[in-house]
Length: 572
Image 1 (cartoon, rainbow, N blue to C red):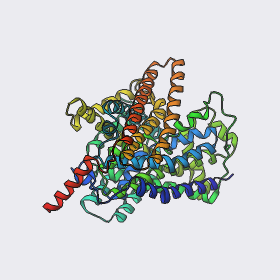
Image 2: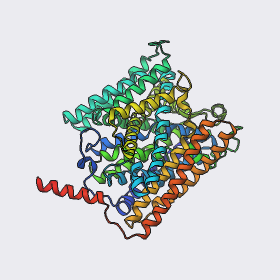
Image 3: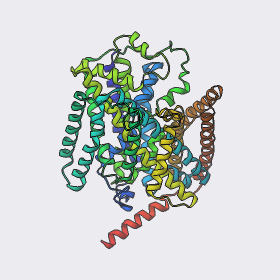
Image 4: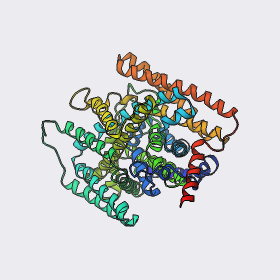
């Protein structure tokens, strides 16, 4: 089978999902209302709460959720064959991820931009909230530490990506000024920003940057990790419109151009899928496809991290509630397209089955390397772009998206620290909150030595933790729908499936870690399992209570928001 058919079927399914299913969710389930005053207007502070053009906000949301994970997960999972990975990415995007991301964004916007962790206190209970915050903090810690390591690895292995990766910061800062200070037309700004970014990619390919060893008394890897954390800390403190929004927006446009290049090359060359559709001859030691497929591919099908972004930053920038469909659901579709591209690159980017098998000789192989190598070969064959430049384009994509996820992750962790402080009655400002986050992130990253390998210490728990969080987020959405007497099944079905698969995987992983005597991960995995089960029980109780109580048309926060809008209109 050629990759062309895989691409066309996948694109058609995701297009149908956005055009049909997301419209059903928006009108019948969430009943999005542009007249409802969003937190961005109600609490506008020019820093975190900023009304934002939906296309710019989509760019922020999409690139924040689309880090390295939608590349890594699918490019590893194809070891079981391309068919199960393809089905989970496409069906998961349409029926699971879109519902989840849009639902979390709607739930937070209806509650003054509160995070999913704080919403759990309101809709599930105080015990559930406290455990929820623990799970979210651990997940974000995994993301921030691991992505720092992934990025520094790419900057070292692909030195041609250094100039565009860091130059993108300057481009984003200029774009932010063009949009907000000088009010320049968005299309003109976009063309200028993307042109500058691709010019940097061409320059980077011609002038790769390899750091001397040592540099400032550190190895190149250590230096890059420290520099990345310093950048992420600064970016998380700046108003979102200065750097975070424009950087993510330009990166989002850049990604779609990169995907267009990859898909265009696939359309022209239609390379054969050398990997088997279903791989019965997996390497020795490869775990069973159930339940591991559904946690190996998290981002790109459904991801709890998306709920933290939707409720942590995106809901605070939503200009109109109706924009949530484009930002939330189409943001999930964008990540699904990236995951689909990763599957094509990792299965059709090799000349022979033997070449593919040499890479996929063990579970965990493949990942970003297979995406960059395989995708570069497809682009070279289809469009004639030199292999070196093709690899630079794809490596830069991976670096930029991992970096945007990392800086958003630091900001989100700061929110969690501040919310935890509120729970115990301690006021934590943004400076102290950021310092705490950086201390935890750097502490974990360098816990196993100066090479930063500690950053991957708890990463094996990411998949299960991430998916458990997605299920718990859907439980909050379900409770809200039940309280409003709306159809809960579009949220409840994904909730039950994802919770069952991820809990199964977490328990299975607990046994493996115990056999390996990895007691740190055993302890963390145990905490996550207990917290998830406890919150799930609390959620079931909350659902039964919501179903039996009188219907609630509007929550108190919704009423307060409308009264605030009426009051403001009267004063005007």
